[in-house]
Image 1 (cartoon, helix red, strand yellow):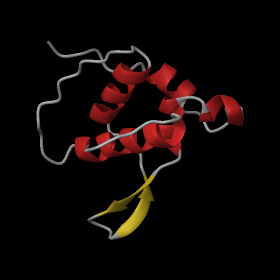
Image 2: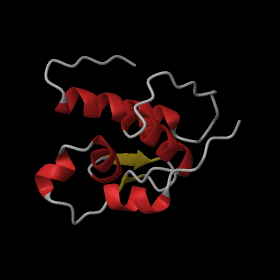
Image 3: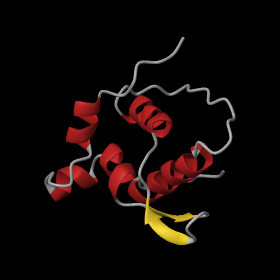
Image 4: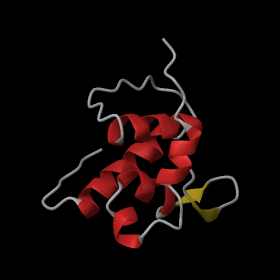
Length: 102
């Protein structure tokens, strides 16, 4: 079964840059879509992390739908390793006493 796509209107509302700062920083969806930078292998530059549709689905399922058991079949070049690293980093930075290992 193919999951429904992330509702684009709701995604844009959750990740809008004009949200009040305290409200935005309390939302892991907003943080993952806005504050992290990654190294791009192609351009050899640091760029802002912009979630791909597949990555948005995982973010939405974890933090909006509160799904805790998600199976991610290993696929190449979709960016799941990067996303999982950023989720772990975000968890450690914003949750007191959190630990993460990848």
